Length: 321
Image (cartoon, rainbow, N blue to C red; front, side, top):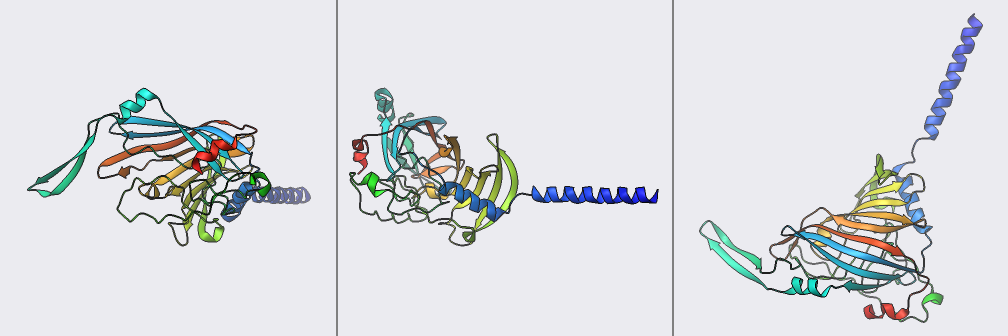
């Protein structure tokens, strides 16, 4: 009897030891390891030569939703991006008619106040500008060849171009990074993706917040706190697929060059097409101020109807050169 009890105890201990080993083996990797593997997934990406897609800009101003559409063509070799705004003549006339004028008020209870009245309820809150964002941007996870650039932009997040592939194409001299706008001075400067360096673990304190479902994908949620230069190292949250470490979603503090874009928190979501992640949406829940009183909410950029043609004529990109 004692022998049987002893054997049972040993068996229980062995079973418990095996369970402990399995639990330990299934434990998630560390936050730094997840971050490193997410970067490796971007490095392993094989880009296609050409991408075409539709791009929608949507926002709300004065309780009205405004939509602007573009057809976009992208060349991966040198990150040339061609944007053609889709204009419906009647809608454009409605948008441009009328005039905005300012009224200056002063009361005995306060200082002078300036307001702007727009006589056209269909007008846009700000000038329609080409959103120069490449469809396969990693938004700071990688630094690639700085000579490979988005035509017209200043981002460093670009693949290394092949001289063999672009020898017959016109090139641009390196473009200087524009100076940031002075604090508190909203501007209508064109959208530009900010210049970034490659983000490595030592640039941030990285914590694993847990595992979450993001669009039916099991994802590790990393929380990043910059150790220095928060205006340069802007990643704040990162969601990485638990199966292949592909980036599913990320949050950045500031996305475009110039105010008010670089003061907002932006969320970028990706969709996987043919095994490669592409930007699906860029959105902010912050309210953006343009001018004195033009407050825009719900600003988002939606990337839709991706297509991957075998070739696009070089002249398609010439208008941005």
